[in-house]
Image (cartoon, rainbow, N blue to C red; front, side):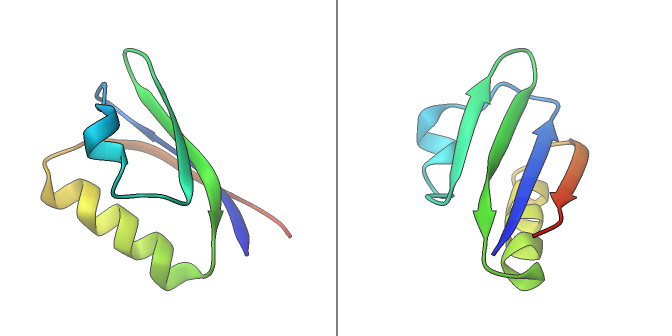
Length: 65
C-alpha cells in the first residue's frame, strides 16, 4: 500500500469523490484527497478518472511505506 495525497483545483462533491472509496476528501476551494492505494496502477486510474472529468490536478504526493 502506498499513502498518497492528491490536490485538485476544484471543490469536488461527495457524489464525485464516492468513486474513490479508498480516499478521503477535504473539500475547500481546492479538494485534497488522501488515503492508501494498492499500487501505481490504482493511482494512475484515479489520476486518469480525474482528468477525464476535466479536473485540474495541482499536486500528487506519495509517501514512502
